[in-house]
Length: 268
Image (cartoon, rainbow, N blue to C red):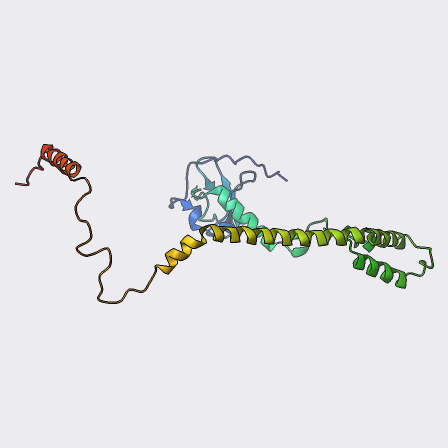
């Protein structure tokens, strides 16, 4: 049996079936195979059998018969689709990607599943209470030690288990540090009170320094009655400049500057 070679077949004739060239874009994507690493083949449009595409540049469907089985004494009938010219007018790479996706989707689920199974890792065991590093208070250490001692059968008298020993030492350490901690808290409260008193004293000193002026200004804010003139209006309000000579000189200079400016051209 001849091996199906990957190199393109040799076209031994220049004849064709005198039909219009067959465009692959007009056919269903599953009716032809143009993978670069495989022999190109196509389903004949006439007999619907898979046939090889011959040639390198001038592509044609290989000459074949309508049926491979005939009655004894009769001749084979040549298929009209033999020597049909074929034109590859598609994007081969895009077609190959689409065909690969269709093959994966059609594959059974058991075959698509990975050979190696990945399981969710088990959570780490909880850290014992004796190893938890958190803020230690006297009441918290006492409750932890008593709760452990109540449920542990090894902690009897002055004897402790591996977990009860650290809890007992933590409770004793909290007892020793509790007076200093309470004194530090009281000192922090006293410091906060001193800062608040200093802030209020500074504010009072500011009012003592500027309070009279501000109070006098506030007292002058009185309600104005309707139909009355303001103190900033009337015959007593000065209308002339303080230095009349300097004012006249400045006005004369401004007049000369305006006179030297060119007049704007009129639109005529």
